[in-house]
Image 1 (cartoon, rainbow, N blue to C red):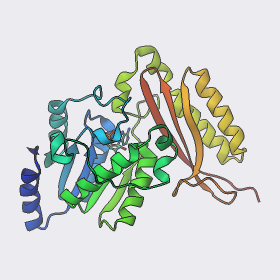
Image 2 (cartoon, rainbow, N blue to C red):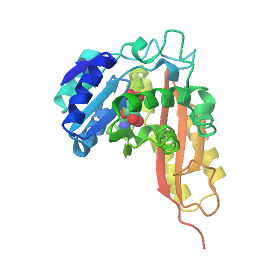
Image 3 (tube, rainbow, N blue to C red):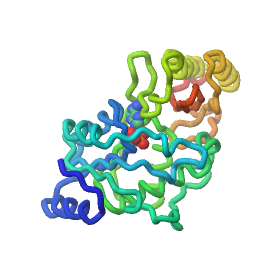
Image 4 (tube, protein in one colour):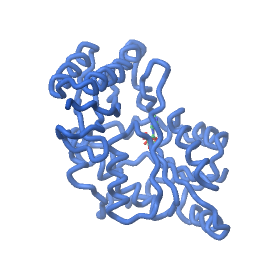
Length: 284
Ligand code: AMP
């Protein structure tokens, strides 16, 4: 594995790959890698000759009161894990390589979709994500890019960006990797203390129950209220629980069968997100 921290060095290796007509997969991350990220790497390795991973804690996707400074960083451990899992090129740019000192003046933004759900709670978050992922796509020009379904709204927004901007990249999603008790793996789970960690799986358990009830035909609004109460009973502070159509994240219409339930909830210092896709049986 080669580790590069500046764009010139990145281009050096990418130029070689291109000369050799190698297929490149990109896996963008913010580091503090866990098994969820490793699933993405496995998928990338299956799809391409060269796996490029970026590790960049992107300040543009953090709000002013959020955890940019506290976000876990451990590049040495990340590099060891990446090397052990078949990464060819690690791009770990310094801040100034991707962002001008006084914030960029050009943004890539998917309007509307980016302002809902997590975007309502975190104004500017998705604009920060799409701006940096667009820059990474321009720099790396991968044939394949791999993302996690854990960040379901992000996945749908990035797919929209790729379609709207005519990036020719094959976008692939990997199912959410979970702990044995169901909690979605996340670098931010490190913020949970022991007592919170035992309650945290309630988020996924509640969403699964909600998805099962909705799949069986229960009224979505009633299920939503039940789910919010269940999260509160587990001492979480839900930010939202919402049903959406699974492909476009529009509000479910009576005839929509493929749905997703998405939620964000605060638990101690952590903000947890999760989602469950399901198929609804329609009453005839
Ligand atoms: P992050 O480092 O949190 O920005 O995540 C980088 C990529 O890994 C994103 O595409 C995430 O959706 C994905 N990811 C994070 N956690 C998981 C997980 N538990 N399962 C699958 N993918 C994940």
